[in-house]
Amino acid sequence: MNAKNTDFGTFAQDVMLGLNSSPKTLPSKYFYDAKGDKLFQQIMALPEYYLTRKEYEVLEGQHKQILAPILALEKPFNLVELGAGDGMKTKILLRYLAQLKVEFTYYPVDFSGSVLEELEESLSSEFPSMKVHPIQDTYRDSLKKQVWEDGKPNLILFLGANIGNFGVDEAKNIIDHLRVGTKKGDLVLIGFDLKKDPQIILNAYHDEQGVTREFNMNLLDRINRELDADFDRESFIHWPTYDPVSGECRSYLVSQKSQEVTIGALNQTFEFEAFESIFTEISKKYSLSEISSLASLGGFEVKENFMDSEGYFSDVLWEKQ
Image (cartoon, rainbow, N blue to C red; front, top):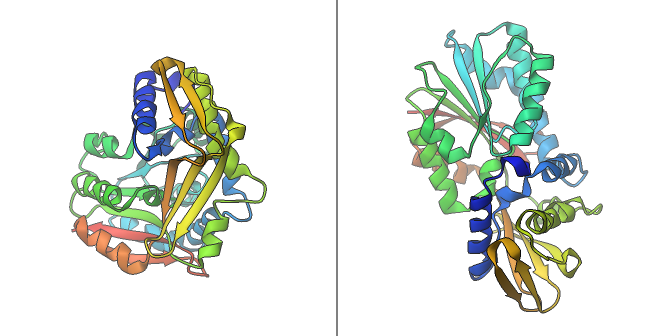
């Protein structure tokens, strides 16, 4: 989301609450301003960042099987995507549907206004006759409002392992919102990054080129720019960790010295001890048994796990019971 689309009060409040908490935190959703969006697109192309390549492999090789259940209904339907991003992976599905001349409406949902603008332009160029209704909102709020609900069958996409950006309790809360935001027979396709060699996972968040570091540091730059702060980015380091038991990969910004940071918009100064951290992001990895338990919790049944050739990633199709 770019600055003009940011709710200044909410951003300021979230930063104030996060930096006053112990340990300090900053919400990962604020990574995504115009610069952050572009940095994340660079991350997805990194050799270490296997997630995007593996999901592409799944969607390119198995899109017909993935879409078969919704197409078998032989009815117009809604294709709702939570966290649509640049839509590059989704276009694999959209091209197939356009080729079949299927009647459907695409609802891309994203928190980032700048990404939605670019996506809408791209889609109108490639698919001029496609019905597209962008929704700038959070996952939870969009599922509460269900602006797409018109009685037609829904296929809800939650790709890119976005569910992994939430801790266990929050992920359960998202699934609960999916439960409330769907009706019997609706389908949900969720991307899960699977548990694997811990080093492979850690490397994905600590690339040699330092793009992931820049992505994290951009959060401090954004606070400096939009909230009149004086973070010295060079006095912080990007530090990812991975716990193979919980499956949680966590990212931190660690202060390399004792320092004070003043945020003008908050009229507040924050003290950092040497090597004190700010928790910025979580990326949880799942086992297939954990995925099945999560589905049951929301009243869904796992129809099929669509996995890549190495078993790194799975797009899992659920049906609302």
